[in-house]
Amino acid sequence: MPHVHIALSSGRTIEQKRKAAAAITDAMVRELSCTRESVSLVFSDVDDHNWASGGKLLGDVKAAKSASGSSA
Image 1 (spheres, rainbow, N blue to C red):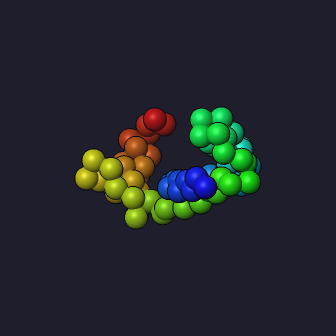
Image 2 (image 1 turned 60 degrees about the vertical axis):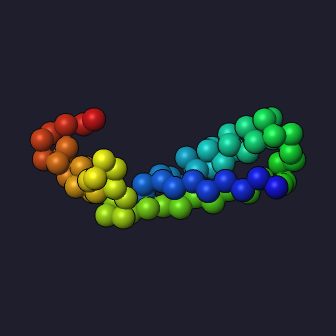
Image 3 (image 1 turned 45 degrees about the horizontal axis):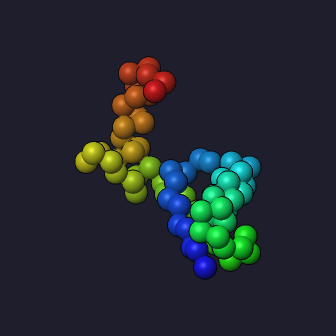
């Protein structure tokens, strides 16, 4: 029984998660030859102040981009 845990920065919509759940389940069924019913997924929304990459908190990186006017 495949169990997939997906950590996401907060802000994804329920519809985005529905689409991701369907696509990931389809991939597990196709690649692992399991049933759809055997696949379980957990989405964990992580606040920006609890996620760091490259030694910087995601919230700080977003704030810096916002302050500089960058949209990327």
